[in-house]
Length: 347
Image (cartoon, rainbow, N blue to C red; front, side, top):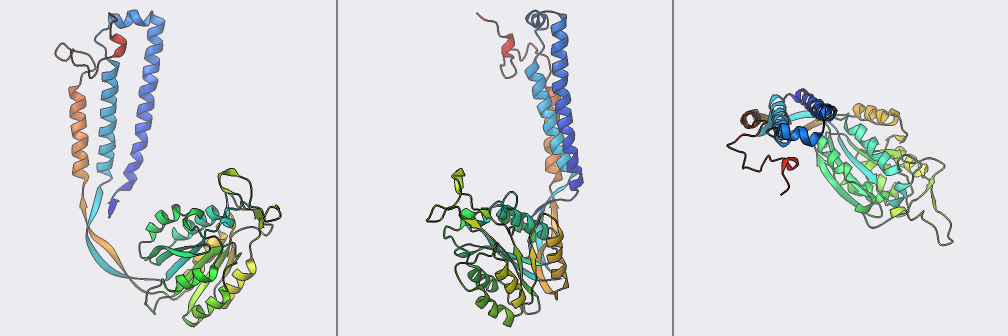
């Protein structure tokens, strides 16, 4: 586990952009002044010991030294010892529809990306809960097993696309069944399935799958993704829109009815996704009302500081920068490492 003990110091890296910008501006002003003084080729002959490449090298070394010094101030650390601690929370399995209909653009940029942003808002507000991630279309797969490392869900979430499941369709019932089997055996913790879909279930009987959930106290919170007017389903690579056998453009309209029935059957809630934070806040509020059981999680109790290594690198770069002179000298004149091409005389 890697972390920065003092991450606020990382903002100092922005000063590097200002420093480089000032250097470039300085070079531009110097060149303009030399042009006003006379012919550049003649001036370069008058100052043969000046080396622009050496100055650039020195600036690069100073910049690297600054980067490593800032990183040292931020105190980079690696976790060295794991410990188990008990917290209070609930278990949540997110089931996300990745069928092609989720590419419809009645939500911007499309339904799938809007759903992913919605999930991200919820994840950012979870603290001690366990989280798992399932994706489904005509089939269902576990994208991330249930874990107490909620932040890792962002990595899995960012990689989700409609290409992950080749079998098309919307098997909500299968997704619910897989989600119900993905919880831990802890009976004292409330369990929630957060289902995000446009609701166009064409593969199975989702309500029949909900009976098992009711018997085991698992709630389903459903989120309708898409507008009532619907939208056509764009084909990949900009090849137009999906059409039926008669050549008519297929319009995907969310089936809110099945999502409402699923939520009601399991004593859950139903919300409609929009561009505000109201829907996600409602989900988080309902989760906070649930019975929170004891959840054991692995945390790093000890960290090893690594700032000395970064400080040493910064010191080395500063030493090298101090050794390099901006002007050429007789000892290193024959070394071509910093030789300006502009000063090479044509034979």
